[in-house]
Image (tube, rainbow, N blue to C red):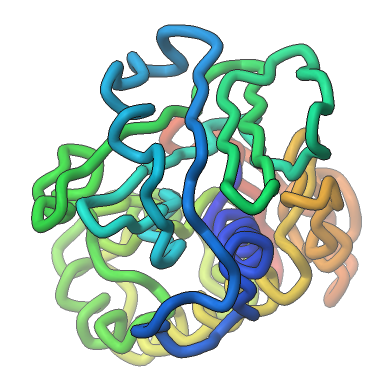
Length: 287
């Protein structure tokens, strides 16, 4: 499933394509450089993971996309009256298509713009979804209301993490994947961050010291930032808007490397299931 770096990379590509914005630009308050008015929203089935709102086509047709944002692993297309919320699920991908280009298998949504740009959402396994969120009700949406801080924000600090983990007996790996504690840190990046700070993923979260929580918060940001710059990680299905694969998978220290030698100490990487997810670590480098 695409994690925060993959969704952030897709968001950046969409902002450039739809709005003419490069990553990390300031919020546009005047009219965007490119015409981002929607000409037509089409869905070719009634549902994906959840039903597609029947009023969605009428809500967005003729309206201008003001910005494209990310919250956790959700894409948010911001309009004057609300947001088009999009989740990629496990195999979902937005891509640009040429005018009059025929649909292919598993193309479920088509978003046409006045200026001729067309985006298509393809999702073979249909775990992705779209929804509409009214203006002023974003934080009330059931998919967003429970979410914790963004790991790349100033709100995510070692002290805040330490406070959330105190007296918790669950493995640290499962808790930093808990979206109520911090959002977007999925299986890949949790394993990689814990390796870098030398903490075994099975250790009880409440046993981490303040200093370890500080290092973990800093390292999570570093790993996610590196992955974003590399275009994310492609293990199987993930592709960017341009169809390109991510590049961070070539830098993994532990993830998906069971039985291979550690890049630091040459011990064989171990693996076990933690909270239903495959987890990887080095028995010598991580304690």
